[in-house]
Length: 231
Image (cartoon, rainbow, N blue to C red; front, side, top):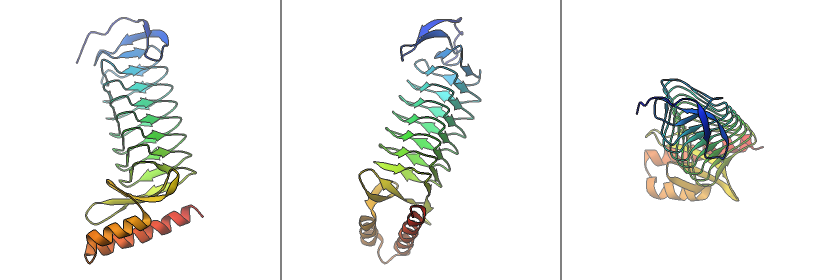
């Protein structure tokens, strides 16, 4: 929606702050005068760009998404739902935020990474390579996730942990990760098991097949990878 940009005026944002702002000509959403939004970017009618946030290129904000602090969106990154960026967070390279997801401090998303549901990124945590967060998953303390890794449920990465997903020959990516108030879990797509549960499941469903043998090897490698990082 291309509309005529309103003149600068005092506007009360949804957080209660009343500051000088204007409506962005591409979408009609409110932009604080202290923020910067490129003409090529899109700010939907109910989206808000506050403080010193910046939007570049073809980045887009939809629905009731918000940018705060010194957050920045680049390239073709997108925000949907009630997602919010805070602090010095950054979105790059077609990354996506959905639902009630949040980015804080110096967190970064790269390479088609996605956040959904109530997922959270804190401190200098980073996502790469089409990685995916959903549920109540959390990242802290310079942790990083790569290679189509899929964090869901109550999964947690912290203390500079690095999670490299191991991809099976059929494209299914596996990780082994800490879990809130529980032992570590194997996560692969919608599957979410303890290590013993994972072995039982894939032996029952893939036992005696090449994929079954490959899966058992992946689980073994994940356990070694986890022990190296946490010892």
